Image (cartoon, rainbow, N blue to C red):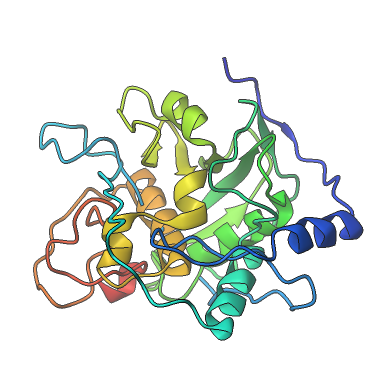
Length: 282
């Protein structure tokens, strides 16, 4: 069973982070779109100020409150090797999202820790949502950096509040309107029940935008095959799952060749639209 969230305690020292990054420095981007490890000498690259997923999902009868679809690893396709500049950019984006090691395939212990701290919404809005941020214990993630990343995506000028209707403040209270939770595939299954995410997808349900850590680390094949990249998928994942929690249902691609509405199940099939992580662009 999942325990009650505990406050997040940052235990990694700067030296430990640098060692972790150095040992993973040989990682490179492959067919899955996996990101290279961080170069500790490179400064973090902040994402543009101001996301996925769903159940198992291509079932039209499935509950419309979350997730995204099947992946097929096309091993026969050989992609060009990433350039040094590509690897550096991806490393900076991963670091700015809070990733501090090999997150894809990492397992947690099932316990959720609340990232402590509060932050006011950056602007007035029709509705201001109080958001709690949680990280599963055991994942190689810096909770404070992940929390900053999630709120920066939600409050970006391209996000749900682009029209002044909503804004997002951070809280560590149990009285939050909802939580953004980074969890391992196994724990995601429990948190998303009764939706069948299969350990592959994410969900927005039960008062949580549950982000599958494997997807947060490396995205998913349909999105990448359509021309998207991992940093763009992270933005989609946050915005899509939070979108469910603030009342948005799935939609279809209406204009093939144009950016997909963010509530299209882009983890399954973009239906001819191009990848997009932002509400304002779709």
